[in-house]
Image (cartoon, rainbow, N blue to C red; front, side, top):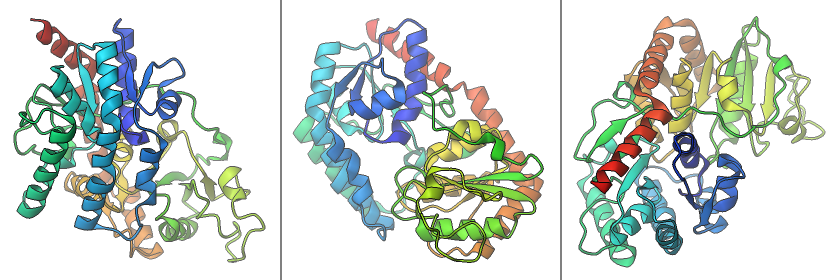
Length: 405
């Protein structure tokens, strides 16, 4: 696994299901992060470290489009693969797994497994690369192919031709075609299992008594990797929610305290302690700002979600039948936002230019129009039918059996 919360979390449920079925499970990745998400009892072979985990955070906030893609690959994914390769090699040689499960962005997993002759499967935490996102950009695709070829020669088997993002044995995608649409290209055995929704270690405390059952609850979150970009956006969200306080409450996830620049009475004066609202419940009855929330539990009470179109957040919301307002920032988020809109489950706004009025109008639409909620419910139904973590575990069992035949 790469040192990214949104990539480890889906695998946590699959690992737990495999353990329940009597299998031995070990992890290769950043021990502190995996231990926090998978539980203190998880066996972790260390690979790379905090330096790699910090890389996405220092990416300049203004980078978008192809420039962001280049930064992601050249400054994070490829260096991460090179840093992880020795640890992955040691893990495979010591643990001797029947199947290696490789996150789509932990490229060392597939490359090392292939070099050592191990059977491997892809854990795909985003569907963007399966839907032809680069099909209209042949030069970008050629550049990426050359980049992966160079990486393979350094840490993998130079004679191989498999794309390390897509195992030829099995690709487990935490989505369904009801959301992602048709899958393009050849990705071996592609199985959409829906999101991995499972019990997780205890999350942060939350003042559940603050929620007003007479008003809709709106969750606003930009995920764990975009806290450096969200100050203006969260401020607009706060204003939009304030104007609708007669009908909704907003829970704003704000790890950096950037949304807590004003006190709760709407007079624009600075709070005496700007970060206090991000740590403790504010006395504000309309807007609650927290550094973190128990997202899965809160989604059971939410009427709408405003987010960056991160794959996990989108799928967790849709699992609960909650419609979305999506404001993609970069990477795969524009593709995922397009999937939400195409499926009818939400409305897209422009992250960098949206105003409180535009956000408010989008919120009004997803709260008042039954269409987005019905679409969210339909997609959520497809997620549950796909099987989630148990289905993923069953497919991995089948792959292990095939490897022994």
